[in-house]
Image (cartoon, rainbow, N blue to C red; front, side, top):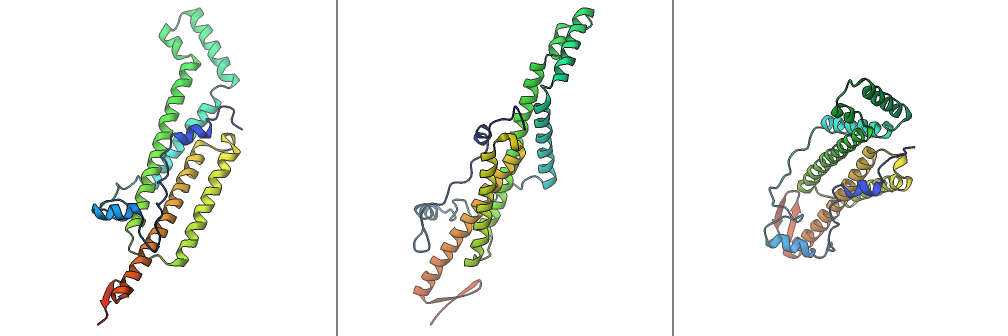
Length: 233
């Protein structure tokens, strides 16, 4: 169990929040935001039709940043062990007695300065890892929004199951406390929950839009045949 792990509440405050839940709407009428987006030329998700976020780093690059975060966290957790203190006091005493080091060199041996540097690098690594996962989520989210594949009723259940599983996993990590998970595991769980929730919401919205279009086509006497629409005579 970690003795100096950062509280999960503090970690959560440093992460990008999940996208907000969709506004009330449904298969009978569009939400207020959808109506506004249509009026100003945006798609149903609030983006210009041709918008596409930058491609995220490769899985290998993301894994490398995660490994860096793990290494710095392990370094932070073990830098206050008894051997480090013993080595520091011994080195400081010998340096002062023999006058082999300058004041700057002696200060460099001070463990609190070393601790501050490790904490700073750990903070930067945590931010970098969270940012690349957010970029990956944004890219996958937009791909799902732009997908031309129609959403069937049976497609929604697996997405709901994935969202529920991701939420349970995140809740378990938070409930267990930071002593039972690494910062990387917490960030991974947070990002997975955000993505699963967003993909589920996208499917629900697209299904509702399809239902509204089908009703409008029926009223107008239009029959859909895959990508084409034929008006009845």
